[in-house]
Image (cartoon, rainbow, N blue to C red; front, side, top):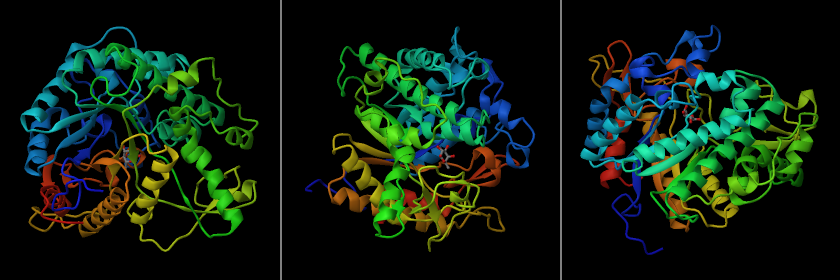
Length: 469
Ligand code: FCB
Protein backbone atom coordinates (compact mmCIF):
# COMPACT_ATOMS: atom_id res chain seq x y z
CA UNK A 1 0.00 0.00 0.00
CA UNK A 2 1.43 3.36 -0.88
CA UNK A 3 -1.20 5.48 0.85
CA UNK A 4 0.19 8.51 2.64
CA UNK A 5 0.38 7.91 6.37
CA UNK A 6 0.34 10.14 9.41
CA UNK A 7 2.47 9.82 12.52
CA UNK A 8 0.01 7.33 13.95
CA UNK A 9 0.52 5.04 10.97
CA UNK A 10 -3.03 5.48 9.64
CA UNK A 11 -3.89 6.93 6.21
CA UNK A 12 -3.97 10.74 6.19
CA UNK A 13 -7.70 10.89 5.39
CA UNK A 14 -8.64 8.33 8.08
CA UNK A 15 -11.76 9.43 9.95
CA UNK A 16 -11.46 9.42 13.74
CA UNK A 17 -14.60 9.80 15.77
CA UNK A 18 -16.61 8.90 18.82
CA UNK A 19 -20.14 7.51 19.03
CA UNK A 20 -23.27 7.73 21.16
CA UNK A 21 -26.98 6.99 20.76
CA UNK A 22 -30.01 9.16 21.44
CA UNK A 23 -31.67 7.26 24.29
CA UNK A 24 -28.33 6.66 25.95
CA UNK A 25 -27.23 10.32 26.20
CA UNK A 26 -29.98 12.80 25.39
CA UNK A 27 -32.26 12.73 28.42
CA UNK A 28 -35.02 15.36 28.01
CA UNK A 29 -37.48 12.61 27.19
CA UNK A 30 -40.51 14.87 27.39
CA UNK A 31 -38.97 17.99 25.84
CA UNK A 32 -40.35 19.73 22.78
CA UNK A 33 -42.99 17.19 21.87
CA UNK A 34 -40.93 13.98 21.99
CA UNK A 35 -43.18 10.91 22.19
CA UNK A 36 -42.50 7.77 24.24
CA UNK A 37 -40.26 5.02 22.87
CA UNK A 38 -40.05 1.35 23.74
CA UNK A 39 -37.01 2.15 25.89
CA UNK A 40 -39.00 4.64 27.99
CA UNK A 41 -41.63 2.00 28.60
CA UNK A 42 -39.12 -0.79 29.20
CA UNK A 43 -36.82 1.13 31.55
CA UNK A 44 -39.82 2.26 33.60
CA UNK A 45 -40.97 -1.35 33.99
CA UNK A 46 -39.67 -2.70 37.33
CA UNK A 47 -37.10 -5.47 37.05
CA UNK A 48 -35.88 -4.69 33.55
CA UNK A 49 -32.91 -2.36 34.05
CA UNK A 50 -30.30 -2.71 36.79
CA UNK A 51 -31.07 -0.45 39.79
CA UNK A 52 -34.22 0.74 38.02
CA UNK A 53 -32.24 3.29 36.02
CA UNK A 54 -33.89 5.07 33.10
CA UNK A 55 -32.76 7.40 30.31
CA UNK A 56 -34.96 10.24 31.61
CA UNK A 57 -32.00 12.54 32.29
CA UNK A 58 -28.79 10.64 31.47
CA UNK A 59 -26.00 13.11 30.63
CA UNK A 60 -28.61 15.54 29.29
CA UNK A 61 -26.89 16.01 25.95
CA UNK A 62 -30.11 17.52 24.63
CA UNK A 63 -29.31 20.59 26.68
CA UNK A 64 -25.53 20.24 26.94
CA UNK A 65 -24.50 19.39 23.39
CA UNK A 66 -22.40 22.54 23.07
CA UNK A 67 -20.18 21.43 25.89
CA UNK A 68 -19.82 17.99 24.34
CA UNK A 69 -18.97 19.37 20.91
CA UNK A 70 -16.33 21.62 22.50
CA UNK A 71 -14.77 18.55 24.12
CA UNK A 72 -14.73 16.75 20.77
CA UNK A 73 -13.11 19.75 19.13
CA UNK A 74 -10.43 19.93 21.80
CA UNK A 75 -9.63 16.28 21.13
CA UNK A 76 -9.21 17.06 17.41
CA UNK A 77 -11.87 14.54 16.41
CA UNK A 78 -13.06 14.44 12.81
CA UNK A 79 -16.53 13.00 13.29
CA UNK A 80 -19.35 12.45 15.75
CA UNK A 81 -21.66 9.49 15.34
CA UNK A 82 -24.95 10.19 17.11
CA UNK A 83 -28.43 8.86 16.53
CA UNK A 84 -31.69 10.57 15.74
CA UNK A 85 -34.52 9.74 18.12
CA UNK A 86 -37.46 8.73 15.93
CA UNK A 87 -39.96 9.73 18.70
CA UNK A 88 -38.59 13.29 18.60
CA UNK A 89 -39.12 13.48 14.84
CA UNK A 90 -42.43 11.62 14.66
CA UNK A 91 -43.86 11.22 18.15
CA UNK A 92 -46.48 8.63 17.15
CA UNK A 93 -44.26 6.70 14.76
CA UNK A 94 -46.59 7.61 11.90
CA UNK A 95 -48.46 10.71 10.80
CA UNK A 96 -47.33 14.19 11.82
CA UNK A 97 -43.68 15.18 12.03
CA UNK A 98 -42.42 17.41 14.82
CA UNK A 99 -40.45 20.47 13.60
CA UNK A 100 -38.91 20.94 17.04
CA UNK A 101 -37.36 17.50 16.76
CA UNK A 102 -35.67 18.37 13.49
CA UNK A 103 -34.56 21.69 15.00
CA UNK A 104 -32.62 19.98 17.74
CA UNK A 105 -30.57 17.92 15.30
CA UNK A 106 -29.98 20.96 13.10
CA UNK A 107 -28.62 22.85 16.09
CA UNK A 108 -26.41 19.93 17.04
CA UNK A 109 -25.08 19.51 13.50
CA UNK A 110 -24.47 23.24 13.04
CA UNK A 111 -22.46 23.21 16.23
CA UNK A 112 -20.46 20.21 14.99
CA UNK A 113 -19.75 21.88 11.67
CA UNK A 114 -18.63 25.09 13.35
CA UNK A 115 -16.12 22.92 15.19
CA UNK A 116 -15.01 21.25 11.95
CA UNK A 117 -16.55 17.89 12.92
CA UNK A 118 -18.51 15.72 10.48
CA UNK A 119 -22.01 14.62 11.45
CA UNK A 120 -22.61 10.88 11.15
CA UNK A 121 -26.28 10.25 11.87
CA UNK A 122 -27.78 6.88 12.73
CA UNK A 123 -31.49 6.83 11.97
CA UNK A 124 -32.39 4.04 14.34
CA UNK A 125 -30.52 3.10 17.47
CA UNK A 126 -33.31 1.12 19.15
CA UNK A 127 -35.79 3.79 20.30
CA UNK A 128 -38.90 2.67 18.42
CA UNK A 129 -41.92 4.92 19.01
CA UNK A 130 -44.13 3.08 21.51
CA UNK A 131 -47.31 3.31 19.37
CA UNK A 132 -45.56 1.21 16.70
CA UNK A 133 -44.71 -1.47 19.25
CA UNK A 134 -48.34 -1.40 20.37
CA UNK A 135 -49.27 -2.11 16.76
CA UNK A 136 -46.98 -5.16 16.64
CA UNK A 137 -43.43 -3.78 16.63
CA UNK A 138 -40.72 -5.10 14.34
CA UNK A 139 -42.33 -8.55 13.91
CA UNK A 140 -45.05 -6.66 12.06
CA UNK A 141 -44.23 -5.95 8.41
CA UNK A 142 -45.88 -2.55 8.53
CA UNK A 143 -43.15 -1.22 10.84
CA UNK A 144 -40.65 -1.41 7.96
CA UNK A 145 -42.81 0.93 5.90
CA UNK A 146 -43.33 3.34 8.80
CA UNK A 147 -39.53 3.44 9.22
CA UNK A 148 -39.02 4.19 5.52
CA UNK A 149 -41.40 7.13 5.80
CA UNK A 150 -39.58 8.47 8.82
CA UNK A 151 -36.20 8.00 7.15
CA UNK A 152 -37.31 9.84 4.02
CA UNK A 153 -38.49 12.78 6.14
CA UNK A 154 -35.04 12.90 7.75
CA UNK A 155 -33.28 12.73 4.37
CA UNK A 156 -35.36 15.67 3.14
CA UNK A 157 -35.15 17.79 6.26
CA UNK A 158 -31.58 17.07 7.35
CA UNK A 159 -29.99 15.95 4.08
CA UNK A 160 -28.07 19.20 3.60
CA UNK A 161 -26.58 18.88 7.07
CA UNK A 162 -25.66 15.25 7.62
CA UNK A 163 -22.29 14.01 6.28
CA UNK A 164 -22.90 10.25 6.54
CA UNK A 165 -26.08 8.27 7.09
CA UNK A 166 -26.40 5.01 8.97
CA UNK A 167 -29.80 3.39 8.57
CA UNK A 168 -29.78 0.97 11.51
CA UNK A 169 -27.60 0.14 14.46
CA UNK A 170 -27.13 -3.58 15.13
CA UNK A 171 -30.42 -5.07 13.90
CA UNK A 172 -29.25 -8.37 15.47
CA UNK A 173 -29.69 -6.76 18.90
CA UNK A 174 -33.09 -5.30 18.07
CA UNK A 175 -34.32 -8.69 16.88
CA UNK A 176 -32.59 -11.14 19.23
CA UNK A 177 -32.30 -9.18 22.48
CA UNK A 178 -35.60 -7.37 21.99
CA UNK A 179 -37.90 -10.13 20.73
CA UNK A 180 -36.29 -13.41 21.71
CA UNK A 181 -34.08 -13.05 24.80
CA UNK A 182 -36.17 -10.17 26.13
CA UNK A 183 -33.23 -8.42 27.83
CA UNK A 184 -33.80 -5.31 25.73
CA UNK A 185 -36.93 -3.37 24.90
CA UNK A 186 -39.62 -4.33 24.20
CA UNK A 187 -38.74 -7.42 26.25
CA UNK A 188 -40.65 -10.04 24.26
CA UNK A 189 -39.56 -13.69 24.11
CA UNK A 190 -40.50 -15.54 20.96
CA UNK A 191 -37.96 -16.98 18.54
CA UNK A 192 -40.23 -16.72 15.49
CA UNK A 193 -40.90 -13.07 16.32
CA UNK A 194 -37.14 -12.47 16.41
CA UNK A 195 -36.63 -13.84 12.89
CA UNK A 196 -39.60 -11.83 11.62
CA UNK A 197 -38.20 -8.72 13.31
CA UNK A 198 -34.81 -9.36 11.73
CA UNK A 199 -36.31 -9.59 8.26
CA UNK A 200 -38.41 -6.46 8.71
CA UNK A 201 -35.45 -4.50 10.04
CA UNK A 202 -33.46 -5.43 6.94
CA UNK A 203 -36.46 -4.60 4.77
CA UNK A 204 -36.72 -1.22 6.52
CA UNK A 205 -33.05 -0.61 5.78
CA UNK A 206 -33.56 -1.55 2.12
CA UNK A 207 -36.68 0.58 1.69
CA UNK A 208 -34.95 3.60 3.20
CA UNK A 209 -31.82 3.13 1.11
CA UNK A 210 -33.94 2.77 -2.02
CA UNK A 211 -35.85 5.95 -1.16
CA UNK A 212 -32.55 7.73 -0.59
CA UNK A 213 -31.20 6.64 -3.97
CA UNK A 214 -34.46 7.74 -5.62
CA UNK A 215 -34.15 11.18 -4.00
CA UNK A 216 -30.69 11.46 -5.54
CA UNK A 217 -31.86 10.19 -8.93
CA UNK A 218 -29.48 7.26 -9.10
CA UNK A 219 -29.64 3.64 -8.02
CA UNK A 220 -25.88 3.32 -7.59
CA UNK A 221 -23.62 3.97 -4.66
CA UNK A 222 -21.99 7.37 -4.65
CA UNK A 223 -25.19 9.36 -5.20
CA UNK A 224 -25.66 11.76 -2.27
CA UNK A 225 -23.61 11.64 0.90
CA UNK A 226 -22.61 8.09 1.84
CA UNK A 227 -25.25 5.81 3.31
CA UNK A 228 -24.63 2.51 5.07
CA UNK A 229 -25.60 0.33 8.01
CA UNK A 230 -23.87 -0.68 11.27
CA UNK A 231 -23.79 -4.38 12.10
CA UNK A 232 -22.49 -6.29 15.09
CA UNK A 233 -21.38 -9.30 13.12
CA UNK A 234 -20.46 -12.07 15.44
CA UNK A 235 -17.57 -14.00 13.96
CA UNK A 236 -16.28 -16.32 16.68
CA UNK A 237 -13.12 -18.33 16.09
CA UNK A 238 -12.83 -22.11 16.39
CA UNK A 239 -11.50 -23.30 19.75
CA UNK A 240 -9.22 -25.83 18.07
CA UNK A 241 -8.13 -26.80 14.58
CA UNK A 242 -10.21 -29.96 14.75
CA UNK A 243 -12.62 -30.34 11.89
CA UNK A 244 -15.70 -30.57 14.11
CA UNK A 245 -14.87 -27.26 15.84
CA UNK A 246 -14.25 -25.58 12.51
CA UNK A 247 -17.62 -26.85 11.29
CA UNK A 248 -19.24 -25.61 14.51
CA UNK A 249 -17.82 -22.13 14.02
CA UNK A 250 -19.13 -22.09 10.50
CA UNK A 251 -22.61 -22.87 11.84
CA UNK A 252 -22.23 -20.15 14.50
CA UNK A 253 -21.68 -17.60 11.73
CA UNK A 254 -25.18 -18.33 10.36
CA UNK A 255 -27.06 -16.30 12.96
CA UNK A 256 -24.03 -14.37 14.15
CA UNK A 257 -23.07 -12.92 10.80
CA UNK A 258 -24.72 -14.34 7.68
CA UNK A 259 -28.34 -13.65 8.69
CA UNK A 260 -27.76 -9.88 8.66
CA UNK A 261 -24.94 -9.57 6.14
CA UNK A 262 -25.80 -11.96 3.32
CA UNK A 263 -29.11 -10.37 2.27
CA UNK A 264 -27.34 -6.99 1.99
CA UNK A 265 -24.99 -8.66 -0.49
CA UNK A 266 -27.80 -10.10 -2.57
CA UNK A 267 -27.48 -13.58 -1.06
CA UNK A 268 -30.34 -15.54 0.56
CA UNK A 269 -30.75 -16.10 4.30
CA UNK A 270 -28.74 -19.07 5.58
CA UNK A 271 -31.42 -21.78 5.24
CA UNK A 272 -29.52 -24.08 7.59
CA UNK A 273 -30.17 -21.56 10.36
CA UNK A 274 -33.97 -21.72 10.06
CA UNK A 275 -33.87 -25.53 9.84
CA UNK A 276 -31.89 -25.67 13.08
CA UNK A 277 -34.48 -23.50 14.82
CA UNK A 278 -37.59 -25.34 13.64
CA UNK A 279 -40.41 -25.42 14.62
CA UNK A 280 -39.93 -21.64 15.02
CA UNK A 281 -41.17 -20.35 11.67
CA UNK A 282 -38.75 -18.60 9.29
CA UNK A 283 -39.69 -15.03 8.37
CA UNK A 284 -42.21 -14.48 5.64
CA UNK A 285 -40.22 -13.19 2.70
CA UNK A 286 -42.39 -11.70 -0.02
CA UNK A 287 -41.48 -11.38 -3.70
CA UNK A 288 -39.12 -8.50 -4.18
CA UNK A 289 -38.04 -8.21 -0.53
CA UNK A 290 -34.55 -9.58 -1.12
CA UNK A 291 -33.94 -7.21 -4.03
CA UNK A 292 -34.96 -4.25 -1.86
CA UNK A 293 -32.67 -5.34 0.95
CA UNK A 294 -29.78 -5.68 -1.50
CA UNK A 295 -29.96 -2.02 -2.60
CA UNK A 296 -26.26 -1.10 -2.76
CA UNK A 297 -24.74 0.69 0.22
CA UNK A 298 -21.73 3.00 0.23
CA UNK A 299 -20.06 1.54 3.29
CA UNK A 300 -20.49 -1.07 5.97
CA UNK A 301 -20.18 -0.08 9.63
CA UNK A 302 -18.80 -2.68 12.03
CA UNK A 303 -19.31 -2.64 15.78
CA UNK A 304 -16.69 -4.83 17.40
CA UNK A 305 -16.22 -5.44 21.12
CA UNK A 306 -14.94 -9.01 21.57
CA UNK A 307 -14.52 -12.40 20.00
CA UNK A 308 -15.55 -15.75 21.46
CA UNK A 309 -14.10 -19.21 20.94
CA UNK A 310 -16.55 -21.86 19.84
CA UNK A 311 -16.46 -25.65 20.03
CA UNK A 312 -18.74 -28.30 18.63
CA UNK A 313 -21.47 -29.36 21.07
CA UNK A 314 -24.34 -31.80 21.07
CA UNK A 315 -27.69 -30.21 20.35
CA UNK A 316 -30.09 -30.20 23.24
CA UNK A 317 -30.78 -28.41 26.48
CA UNK A 318 -27.31 -29.35 27.72
CA UNK A 319 -25.75 -27.69 24.69
CA UNK A 320 -25.82 -24.20 26.22
CA UNK A 321 -22.77 -22.48 27.62
CA UNK A 322 -24.12 -22.53 31.16
CA UNK A 323 -23.64 -18.79 31.34
CA UNK A 324 -27.16 -17.72 30.62
CA UNK A 325 -26.74 -17.88 26.87
CA UNK A 326 -29.55 -19.99 25.43
CA UNK A 327 -28.74 -23.31 23.84
CA UNK A 328 -27.58 -23.10 20.28
CA UNK A 329 -29.53 -25.59 18.22
CA UNK A 330 -26.84 -25.18 15.58
CA UNK A 331 -24.66 -27.37 17.80
CA UNK A 332 -21.96 -25.16 19.22
CA UNK A 333 -20.97 -23.74 22.58
CA UNK A 334 -18.67 -21.02 23.85
CA UNK A 335 -15.57 -22.24 25.62
CA UNK A 336 -13.43 -20.33 28.15
CA UNK A 337 -10.33 -18.48 26.94
CA UNK A 338 -7.32 -16.92 28.67
CA UNK A 339 -8.24 -13.32 27.89
CA UNK A 340 -8.62 -10.56 30.41
CA UNK A 341 -12.26 -9.48 30.78
CA UNK A 342 -13.85 -6.05 30.91
CA UNK A 343 -16.48 -4.83 33.38
CA UNK A 344 -19.05 -6.30 30.93
CA UNK A 345 -17.28 -9.66 31.36
CA UNK A 346 -16.38 -9.45 27.67
CA UNK A 347 -12.98 -10.90 26.73
CA UNK A 348 -10.38 -8.43 25.47
CA UNK A 349 -9.29 -9.85 22.09
CA UNK A 350 -7.58 -7.30 19.85
CA UNK A 351 -6.53 -10.08 17.44
CA UNK A 352 -10.23 -10.79 17.12
CA UNK A 353 -10.72 -7.37 15.56
CA UNK A 354 -7.95 -8.12 13.07
CA UNK A 355 -9.60 -11.47 12.21
CA UNK A 356 -13.02 -9.83 12.10
CA UNK A 357 -11.92 -7.20 9.58
CA UNK A 358 -10.39 -9.87 7.37
CA UNK A 359 -13.46 -12.09 7.69
CA UNK A 360 -15.77 -9.27 6.58
CA UNK A 361 -13.42 -8.08 3.86
CA UNK A 362 -13.28 -11.57 2.36
CA UNK A 363 -16.98 -12.25 2.84
CA UNK A 364 -17.86 -9.04 0.99
CA UNK A 365 -15.31 -9.72 -1.80
CA UNK A 366 -13.50 -6.51 -0.94
CA UNK A 367 -16.28 -4.50 -2.55
CA UNK A 368 -17.53 -2.31 0.30
CA UNK A 369 -15.47 0.27 2.25
CA UNK A 370 -15.54 -0.42 5.97
CA UNK A 371 -15.77 1.73 9.08
CA UNK A 372 -15.50 0.63 12.67
CA UNK A 373 -18.56 2.44 13.94
CA UNK A 374 -18.16 1.23 17.53
CA UNK A 375 -15.34 -0.16 19.61
CA UNK A 376 -14.48 0.38 23.25
CA UNK A 377 -14.75 -1.17 26.68
CA UNK A 378 -16.38 -0.79 30.07
CA UNK A 379 -14.01 -0.23 32.98
CA UNK A 380 -14.75 0.27 36.69
CA UNK A 381 -13.66 3.89 36.51
CA UNK A 382 -13.14 6.09 39.54
CA UNK A 383 -12.13 9.72 39.84
CA UNK A 384 -8.97 10.84 41.61
CA UNK A 385 -9.52 12.24 45.11
CA UNK A 386 -9.62 15.80 43.86
CA UNK A 387 -12.29 14.74 41.38
CA UNK A 388 -10.39 16.12 38.41
CA UNK A 389 -8.90 13.09 36.69
CA UNK A 390 -9.70 9.49 35.83
CA UNK A 391 -6.76 7.18 35.17
CA UNK A 392 -8.41 4.53 33.02
CA UNK A 393 -5.24 2.79 31.96
CA UNK A 394 -7.07 -0.42 31.02
CA UNK A 395 -9.16 1.49 28.50
CA UNK A 396 -6.04 3.16 27.10
CA UNK A 397 -4.45 -0.28 26.64
CA UNK A 398 -7.64 -1.66 25.10
CA UNK A 399 -7.85 1.15 22.57
CA UNK A 400 -4.16 1.06 21.76
CA UNK A 401 -4.21 -2.68 21.03
CA UNK A 402 -7.40 -2.49 18.96
CA UNK A 403 -6.13 0.50 16.97
CA UNK A 404 -2.94 -1.45 16.23
CA UNK A 405 -4.96 -4.48 15.08
CA UNK A 406 -7.00 -2.25 12.75
CA UNK A 407 -3.88 -0.64 11.34
CA UNK A 408 -2.40 -4.04 10.61
CA UNK A 409 -5.52 -4.99 8.64
CA UNK A 410 -5.25 -1.72 6.69
CA UNK A 411 -1.60 -2.48 5.95
CA UNK A 412 -2.73 -5.80 4.49
CA UNK A 413 -5.20 -4.17 2.14
CA UNK A 414 -8.50 -3.98 4.05
CA UNK A 415 -10.24 -0.75 3.03
CA UNK A 416 -10.99 0.54 6.53
CA UNK A 417 -11.73 4.26 6.40
CA UNK A 418 -12.58 5.33 9.90
CA UNK A 419 -12.86 4.39 13.54
CA UNK A 420 -15.45 5.51 16.09
CA UNK A 421 -14.74 4.86 19.74
CA UNK A 422 -17.70 3.89 21.89
CA UNK A 423 -18.25 6.15 23.63
CA UNK A 424 -17.76 9.91 23.86
CA UNK A 425 -19.05 9.88 27.41
CA UNK A 426 -20.40 7.43 30.00
CA UNK A 427 -24.10 6.87 29.43
CA UNK A 428 -27.18 4.71 29.90
CA UNK A 429 -25.86 1.25 29.04
CA UNK A 430 -29.26 -0.35 28.28
CA UNK A 431 -30.13 -3.16 30.72
CA UNK A 432 -27.06 -2.23 32.80
CA UNK A 433 -28.23 1.32 33.36
CA UNK A 434 -25.46 3.68 34.51
CA UNK A 435 -23.60 0.82 36.16
CA UNK A 436 -21.26 0.27 33.19
CA UNK A 437 -19.01 3.08 31.96
CA UNK A 438 -17.81 3.10 28.35
CA UNK A 439 -16.90 6.78 27.90
CA UNK A 440 -13.56 8.43 27.25
CA UNK A 441 -15.18 11.18 29.30
CA UNK A 442 -16.37 10.46 32.82
CA UNK A 443 -19.92 11.49 33.62
CA UNK A 444 -20.59 12.64 37.14
CA UNK A 445 -24.29 11.84 37.24
CA UNK A 446 -24.88 13.93 40.34
CA UNK A 447 -24.19 17.27 38.72
CA UNK A 448 -23.58 16.19 35.11
CA UNK A 449 -20.00 17.37 35.18
CA UNK A 450 -17.85 15.97 32.33
CA UNK A 451 -14.33 14.88 33.28
CA UNK A 452 -12.06 13.75 30.42
CA UNK A 453 -10.38 10.44 31.28
CA UNK A 454 -6.81 9.49 30.37
CA UNK A 455 -8.24 7.60 27.37
CA UNK A 456 -9.62 10.91 26.06
CA UNK A 457 -6.12 12.40 26.10
CA UNK A 458 -4.72 9.22 24.56
CA UNK A 459 -7.28 9.39 21.75
CA UNK A 460 -6.39 13.05 21.18
CA UNK A 461 -2.72 12.12 20.80
CA UNK A 462 -3.49 9.29 18.38
CA UNK A 463 -5.66 11.57 16.25
CA UNK A 464 -2.95 14.26 16.15
CA UNK A 465 -0.36 11.66 15.20
CA UNK A 466 1.72 12.14 18.35
CA UNK A 467 1.03 8.54 19.42
CA UNK A 468 1.52 5.52 17.21
CA UNK A 469 -0.55 2.61 18.57
C1 FCB B 1 -23.52 -1.84 21.39
C2 FCB B 1 -24.57 -0.76 21.25
C3 FCB B 1 -24.20 0.53 21.95
C4 FCB B 1 -23.54 0.28 23.28
C5 FCB B 1 -22.42 -0.73 23.15
C6 FCB B 1 -21.68 -1.00 24.42
O1 FCB B 1 -24.12 -3.09 21.16
O2 FCB B 1 -24.77 -0.47 19.90
O3 FCB B 1 -25.36 1.30 22.06
O4 FCB B 1 -24.47 -0.10 24.22
O5 FCB B 1 -22.92 -1.94 22.64
